[in-house]
Image 1: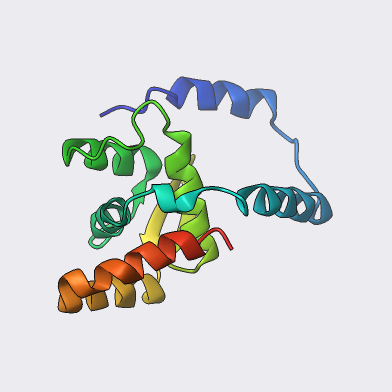
Image 2: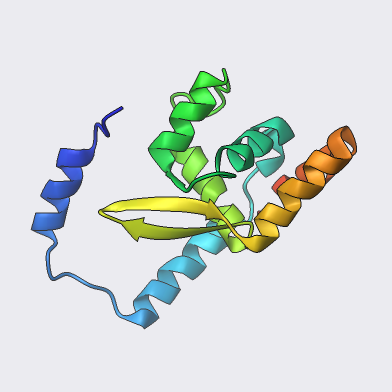
Length: 143
């Protein structure tokens, strides 16, 4: 599927070419985001949602639109009409070092870190017993 926002991204890129933030400003923005996210009701996300996201990243890195599409194909509709929540969850998983990301050709690709791969492997071995660990990770991600 084509990214419906591709032309928008090009336009924004042209408008803000040469525009950059200092490291101090970047850190201030990140801190503000972290503070605002600390009160989110993350436990409203299902452990199965988290498992589906991590499973989708096992073989190959994906950008947010690909992850969203795969979730939709699995009938995971929690982010339907609220796609921004997916990116919040992905960012929180990055903060917990479960995921990492890299910008490639104007798209941010997410991939499992070594910690994330170990987490997924443990889940596959333990099965449903790991369900509580997924719930804890979702709740803990906001800290």
